[in-house]
Structure formats: C-alpha cells, structure tokens
Length: 335
Image (cartoon, rainbow, N blue to C red):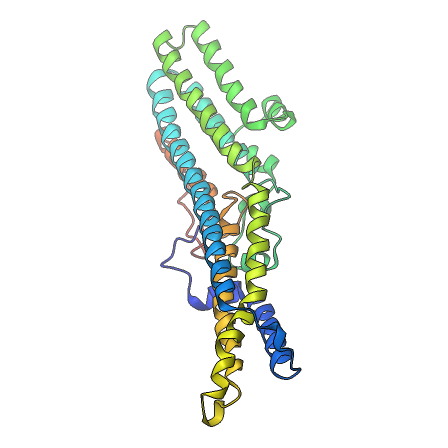
C-alpha cells in the first residue's frame, strides 16, 4: 500500500511505459501505411470507433470497480483481524489468571498471524507480480515474507513439537487456531478459566476462523478469468482500431488546412490516438494490479505492518519491557 501523498506522474508513466511504446509504434505504422503507402482503405468510420470505445469504457469501469471491491474487502478483513486480536489479548490477560498461560496464548496468536500472512503471500498462477512493470517497481520496497523463511519467523513464538506440528500441517493457520481451542479446553477442565470465560474466548476464536476463511477466499479465488480476458481483448481491439478512426477524422482536413500542415493533418492521429489508447491500457493495468490484494504488489493490503502492530500491542499487554519500536519504512510502500 502506498502510504505517501501519491504516486507522481513520472512514476506512473514509467510503470505504464511499455504499452505506451507499443502504441506509438503501432499508430505510426498504421498512419504511415495510410499516408505513404496509399492504403486509404484502412480508415474506419469514427462512429464505429465511438461505439466500440463506449463499450470498452463500460467493461474497463466494471473491472476496476470489482477489483477495487476485492481490495476494499481485504482491508475490511484485516481490520477485523486487527480488532479481534486486541480483544483476544485483553481477554487472555483478564480471564486467565496464570501469566505463563496468558503469554502462551498471546504468542501463539502472533504465530497464527505469522502463518496466515505467509500463506497469503503464496504465489498463484493468476497473479501479476512477475509482470515486467511490477518486477521493476519492486526495487523500491521489500516483501518481508519473500525475504525471510517462515520456520525462522515462527521460531520466535512457538518451539519444539508444537512448531513442528504447525509446519507439518496442511492448513497451518487452521492448525494454530485448533491448538488454541485445545489449550482453552484443557484450561477449562483444569479449572484455570471459568465456563463463561471459555465461551467468550471460543467466540473470539470463531471470529478468527471466519476472518481467516474470508482472507483465504480472496487469496485463493481470482477475479473471474472470463471477465479478465474479455477486458484485455476488447482494450487491445480498441487500441488497434482507434488510430484508424482518427485517420477518418483528420484526413478530410488535408484539403482545408493550409501552411505547414497542408496535406499532413492525418499525422495528428498519432499523438491523439496514442493518448486515448494509453488511458484505456493504463486503466486496465491499474485494475489488474488491484485484483490480488495479498500478492506483494505496491498497492496491496499491508498485512505485514498490521501483524507487526498487533504483536507490539499484545506484548505491551503482557507488560514486556523489551517491546521493539516499529521500524521506519524506507519507502512509502507498506506491506
């Protein structure tokens, strides 16, 4: 997530420059064929382009709305995880009379957060992190889950057989929550917590299960591929036909305009069609980069920062004196 003022125009231009280069070459080639090679049959009536542009605008707008909704839902899920985590910390402190048991429940919860965020960063076939513009932009930030191994991170919070059990589980995050539930049941049977406290803590665990499932759904199910491919195809068709429609607009002006541009007005189709096509292509690129909110892109939900914040809060609830200060980000991109 970009936490600064905004992307600059030059940043955005660099990120979208590859389709811009292709559009310039394409439009120059088409206008040259019309003007220099005499292929006047290439001109397409502007009314056709206008109808196509309207259709593509609706499709692009639909995709951007849906991908933004996915991003917004992911933000809501992790805001709920943030809230439930603080509730869990306060309840374990107040309901469990044993400081060591409270610490175990709190640290295991941080282990759950760690496992879940690593799970969210698992690469998927439909993600865009390997696209050239995104690979290039990643030099401005680091994805923590790609830089450090899970087993080393998990060793801070759980050790021994419990750590091995978590790492060996098919669904590691679910396994951690199951361990929490089993621990609570043992405490209830041993009389270390009351039945009311057990019920309240189980309610929080159910909420964490629900939020985990919502996060997994966003991560494991992509924006529908049939809509994604329609968007790409239609935008590319428009980008090819747009300069031909511009030719249809400017060619009649060759006989009207005098001076330097006399007979050359059709060349104005190049910059104008490039500009409009670049807008459509950029909107499609922005929508695609927002579709997967956990992949490690510059516009993703900052789940790593959220987990660091939760860990600090839980350790303060435990009255620990060596709670580290949150590191100052090296760039406006937070992950």
